[in-house]
Each structure stands twice: as structure tokens, then as C-alpha cells.
Length: 56
Image (cartoon, rainbow, N blue to C red; front, top):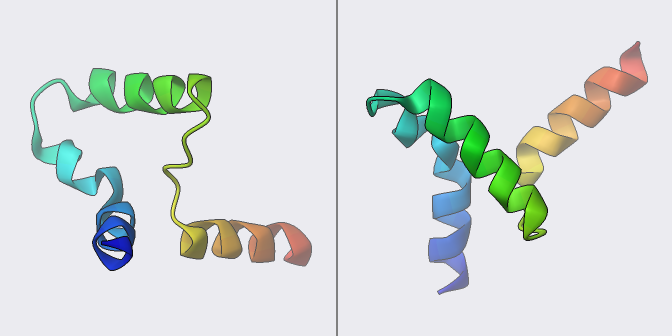
């Protein structure tokens, strides 16, 4: 079950990009996730952004 959740998290919101109105729905999903304190950003992406911040 945990690996399935990790897979969905790694797929990310890229699947939603092909849907109509994605420029509206994706920011809405991020905002609601923050309100409910749900982490939807994959760990590997956070690691990349942290590395980029350290380089600068």
C-alpha cells in the first residue's frame, strides 16, 4: 500500500496537465493541500530544489 502511495506521489500532478482547465485546477489543488497540511510534492523534487538553493 505504501509503495502505491509513493508511486502516485511520484507521478505527481503531471497527469493533470493533460486535462482541460489544468491551469486552474493545479493551483487549486496545491492551495487545498496546504490548507489541509497534505504534502503533495515528492521528496526527490524537494531534494533537487534544496541542492539548487545550496549552490546559489
